[in-house]
Image 1 (spheres, rainbow, N blue to C red):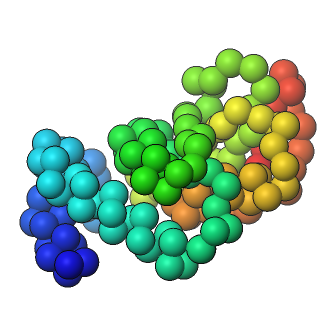
Image 2 (tube, rainbow, N blue to C red):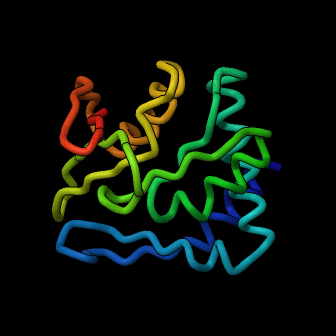
Amino acid sequence: MADSELQLVEQRIRSFPDFPTPGVVFRDISPVLKDPASFRAAIGLLARHLKATHGGRIDYIAGIDSRGFLFGPSLAQELGLGCVLIRKRGKLPGPTVWASYSLEYGKLCFSRPGPNYTQRENAVNSFATRAVSCPPVPHSREPQDTTRL
């Protein structure tokens, strides 16, 4: 079943080479979102992968701006977990925890509500950011009570 689900999802994702800059391949997930069967398959595949690799050691699903906003809440619901949305820096009110990383075509900085999270929650949330090539950095304070991951 997983193979047929994977094929369904793969068939829906469109690739656009050299967008937005040469050497980058943009993956358009719009067709996955448009088709309920492929979206359900994508969520099921992700949920099974996380259960197999992390078991019961996940506290929250971190949905990273903006594709993570589309998949994160559905994946969290499938796993019976809460969802923490990771936004671009400066888009959330109040104290935040943030990290930045470089892309092929620029630099991004993400933040999430914080810093009153347990160490385990910090590890879970920073894992999502590291998954997009952000190396862990030590905690430090900055003006307006914002903490860097």
